[in-house]
Image (tube, rainbow, N blue to C red; front, side, top):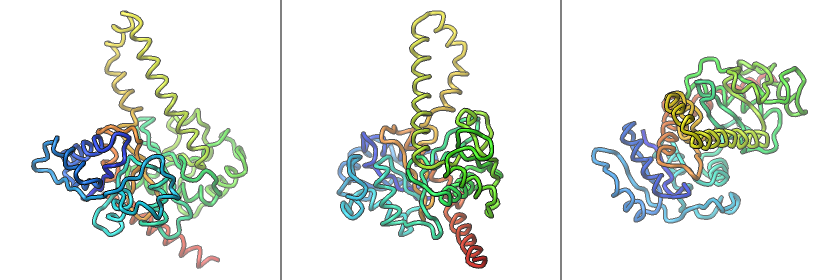
Length: 340
């Protein structure tokens, strides 16, 4: 398997990007293609023992920063690591693309310039994956589409269903819509219309209705569907809450010898909790709906996060996620054409 890593993506590039690529090459045995400024990457790669590993460099003289606007780089900086990396996937020279870089730029370039949308997909969707209840849960959209239509949310649900099935191995994923109440008819107009469409969907989805934010931790669903505006606020609130709780516990434990002794006794439980809530274990967010495997991580990522994002990418490749989505949307369009 050939995984492209945008080595100019993270805030501290190329250090974690290269180190994460080397970790993944050693653990998974895949070919890692580092894309970025060659002299810089060669210097960084020389710090690692890559004997017996398949780690290559593809030169990209330009870099897209976090400050660059997506519209500005769509047709400029064509020799950037994002443009070149995505083009390697488009031309079948690589199987997946992983970046800790500018989310908006990656979304725009992948959707409008290189990979394009899977035929039938109205809008690509950005996801988040958390092992909240002991198994992975998918949240989408988390920011790609601030304004959405009920038809798009129905497609988000389908893409989340297919990703859960193929990449995460979740049998018969339970789909829910995020709302301000679980009762039928709750929510704004968009949520109500999405619920109606999902209850009557022809995709064979296992729709379980609305779910409230407080119920997300109770193992009531596997895929949570929402528009990008709500999803981005939810995501940042959730991650902020996790950070607050962990920082609070750490500070309180350090206040007292008794607390420190108690923490030693609970060390195993704390370790499990940290692992479950640690975003580094997932590493990135799949961009679903484009014609290729694309994983986008945080700019603040460390090497382990990059390694985890690569693992996420390879799971989608192994599960034939893109091929399955393409076939499903083609079949859905065929049904729509024959019934219209």
